[in-house]
Amino acid sequence: MDEHFKYDDQDKKEQQQIQPQKKERKNWGQTVLSGVIGSVLTFGAIFYTPLGEQLVSPQIEKGEGEQTKQTEQTEEVPNVKSAAKEVSTDSLADMVEETSKAIVGISNYKQGEQNPFVPSNGGDVQGGSGSGVIIKQEDDDAYVVTNNHVVEGADRLEVSLANGETVEATLIGSDALSDLAVLRISNEHVESVLEFGDSDELRAGDQVVAIGNPLGVEFSRSVTQGIISAVDRTIETKTSAGQWDLQVIQTDAAINPGNSGGPLINMNGEVIGINSLKIAAGGVEGLGFAIPSNDVLPLVEEMMKNGSVARPYLGISMTDVDKIPRSYLGELPKDVTEGVAVADVDANSPAGKAGMKPGDIIVKMDGEQVQTTEDLRSALYKQLKVGDKVTLEIYRGKEKMNVDVTLSSNTLE
Image (cartoon, rainbow, N blue to C red; front, side, top):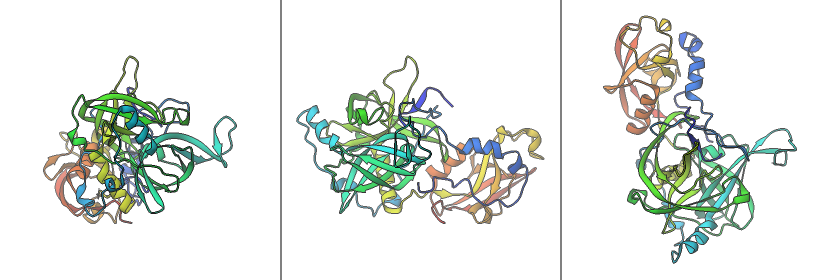
């Protein structure tokens, strides 16, 4: 894990589409790979940060990302911009004063024993906190966007509003790969909402502000100002759903623990990003990252409509071939040094129905080389959609063959 990159703060099923629950047989994949797969597919770096502690680092090299906007799945969902109010931009202070009314603090509570040294409420221990932004009011409800890692694993969520009111929140949907989540709260005390701007129009040098709750509610709705440093960065990170490349906006506006899930705002008072990551290393300053609004909006709309983000589902547990001792790869040709080893197959999944077996080695998908599990996952989620038919080139022992698989949805029960 790269020590330089850190989430700036501290369910629906997370995307476990590559980890089926059913196991058909025991073999080398279950005995030898189980430990390796656990390290590949579990994500400890994205958890919220306990109050007063420093962030946990995600692994970042190239980038992390929900690259596609997935608009084809959200065409019928009303655009959340319709509920937003126009923000005064006579001055920066006016804009900040107006937009701050829609910024909230989010507290993540876990059930546990009472600890006199840890803030608690009703027997639940507060495990961490973050920020969020109210984007829609509808009848008696209001909707809040935040990061998945702020709310992940919570037994109870509370939202603190700009007027000091604290309300219970319900998790409507979350997505580990894009690091986004949507909460629903009572509309009773909500004063304002913000609309999304067009992140595709951003240029390096554009002025922005970040508003959130660094280090907790004591510094609620703190404002930092900066510029867009770059509009197209890719950050590699680990999530609870596996390795992922997140496409982000880079900014030098200060982002600190607790800012996660808060908005990056342009000078028109529009949300052009959701703050999610920063580089935290000695001698490094002004390297923060936000998920672009044009990536956020379709995913948020889909979560509000369906409670989750539908992605193609293959139905295998897997690990990289180069992480397996060669002696466990049986008759696999010696010149095959890269690929994805199948450790387990859900019999009712697309892979299971296509005849794939534990021990198969995937080397190509639709003619494209597959070197790692990240390659396979990226191709599934960024290039393909539910219902697509793909051809996997695999080795079963020393025999090479093609397997045709029709992808289903990860959201299907």
